[in-house]
Length: 106
Ligand code: TYC
Image (tube, rainbow, N blue to C red; front, side, top):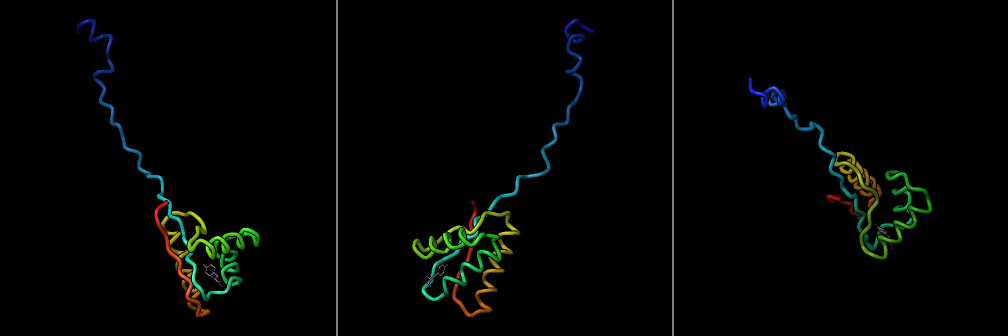
C-alpha cells in the first residue's frame, strides 16, 4: 500500500449518513373571527376554557378581535390546533352563536 493510502485509512470506510428521522412539527395559528352577535363574555370564557388564558389576557384578545376583525388565540402543532378549532366551533354552535374560528400555518 502506498504511503498515501496508509495515511488515509478512513478513505476505505463507508459512512452511512442517516437523515434525521424526526421533522420539527409545523405550527399553526388558531384564529378567532369577529362577528356582530356573539357576546363578549362568551368569547372571554371560551379563551379561558380552551386556550388556558387568564381573564386579563382573554379580555385583551377578545377586544383585539372585536376591533381588528381577527386575532390569534394560540400557536400549536396541527392536531392540537384542529382540536381547538373544533372545540370552539362546537361550543359556539351549542350556544347558537355564529362565532367562527380557523387555523393557518404560522
Ligand atoms: N363583536 C362582538 C360583540 O360586539 C364581540 C366578539 C368578539 C365577537 C370577538 C366575536 O371573535 C369575537 N358582541
